[in-house]
Image 1 (cartoon, rainbow, N blue to C red):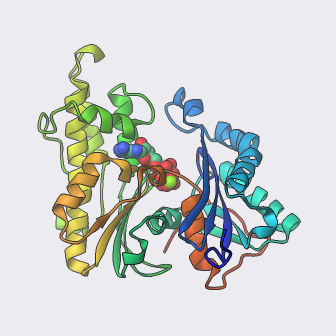
Image 2 (spheres, rainbow, N blue to C red; image 1 turned 60 degrees about the vertical axis):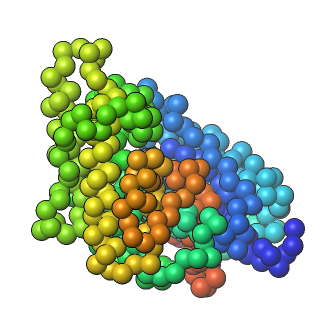
Amino acid sequence: MDVKEHSTRILAIETSCDETAAAVIGDGVTILSNVVASQTDLHARYGGVFPEVASRQHVEVIHAVVDQAMRQAHLGFGDLDCVAVTRGPGLVGSLLVGMNFAKGLAVSRGLPLLGVNHIEGHIYSLWLTEVAPAIRFPVLTLVVSGGHTELYLMSGHGQYQLLGATLDDAAGEAFDKVGRLLGLPYPGGPAIDEASERGNPAAYRFPRAVMEQEHGYDFSFSGLKTAVMRQVSQYHSPTVMPVADLAASFQAAAVEALVSKTAAAAAATGATAVHVAGGVSANRALRAAMTARLDVPVRVPPLALCTDNAAMIGAAAHFHFIRGRRDSLDLDVVPSLQLT
Ligand SMILES: Nc1ncnc2c1ncn2[C@@H]1O[C@H](COP(=O)(O)OP(=O)(O)OP(=O)(O)O)[C@@H](O)[C@H]1O
Ligand SMILES: [Mg+2]
């Protein structure tokens, strides 16, 4: 491999929730390896992430996951410039596994340590795609994930203005809760996406969360979830429930709320493009509606980079690394870490 082409190599570790992930990123934009060990099957029986089970599983597999990332990149630890790790937001026990592993590597291999905000990671997943050279600020960024629904105006690397956020449930959380109501497999997001393909999005007119302008660019999904719950309670048995129609109608309402606020913010801010990141950005209806409704280019990461991964953590770390940021070994995890 040409050393000049990849003059900065960062090993990134991500364990904020239920994915144990490690990746090596060259110069902030090239994925030299990207390994994700998902725990979804372990948590399915609980219908959500069981924190104690998550941290124990991270402990079990982190060594092998990091090892595999290094082998896939064909690199030794001596070839690295930095070890980056997610420091928050996330589950405290899960975050600590990644943080302590990264610190161990930093000490034993004499590497600088860099802590990364997980949400900034989701945002930087776009820099790992072929659109990266075309990105011009300001960019409007919608982060839609399991724990977050936030609209940021990004005016430069590391410069974020929070324009709006959910007032209650995150979009992904709403998909997961409605999935459970409809008896769909965990996690609900992909299952609703799938079921919606067979359903009529106009079968039920569910409320379009917080359309009123007094809430600016904020979102709300709890009223929508309650409306679905009320509709579901009308059916005496799950076998007579029109699951596909309910899923498609819920999805249409959730997507409409996300797209209308994003379109309004794009028009008001003069953003050059809209980026959508986080697990829910994998949703097909959301991708299609964003592209159809926005007047500026809409960019969404490939599916593998939408949900949690360490490549995005490495991409975000790169922009801090080249600006000279380094963290000390007493860096702590912050479960409710904010971006702004
Ligand atoms: N195709 C899809 N349609 C809708 N939602 C989806 C789809 N694929 C994944 N999701 C949702 O994305 C969420 C997971 O995304 P992600 O891994 O980014 O969240 P997280 O890391 O748990 O939360 P956060 O990033 O806020 O800490 C889940 O709620 C899941 O249901
Ligand atoms: Mg995430």
